[in-house]
Structure formats: structure tokens, C-alpha cells
Length: 67
View: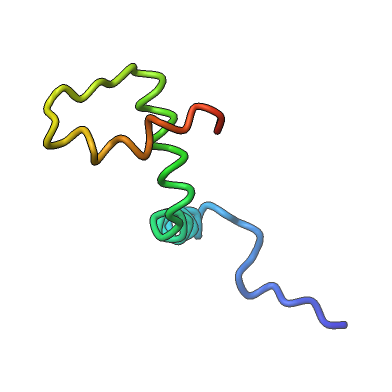
């Protein structure tokens, strides 16, 4: 087997590119986004008083068994 050393072992060159790829992947994952929104809405005790907008966040605040 032949070792390839074209890219080298310095990850710093590719760090920004990897971060962008991971962000794009997480942005497309709806279950991940739901989990994050639920976490922040619960931790920050967000309460929507305007009935027109309360239904938007109800899917994130009603699931108390998920963590």
C-alpha cells in the first residue's frame, strides 16, 4: 500500500471548510433544529403571549418528555 502525503497532516488548512460542511449538514437536519429550538425555549422560559404566534412555537414547547 502506498501512503499519500499530498494533503499533509495539518488540519488547520481544512478546518474552515470542515466547519462549513458540518453547519450545512446540521442546517438541513430538521430533527436537530427542533431539538435545539426546544432546548433554548425551555431553558430560557420563553412564553409567547400573542395568540397569532403561539401556534408557531407550540410544537417546541409541548413535548416535555423529550430531552
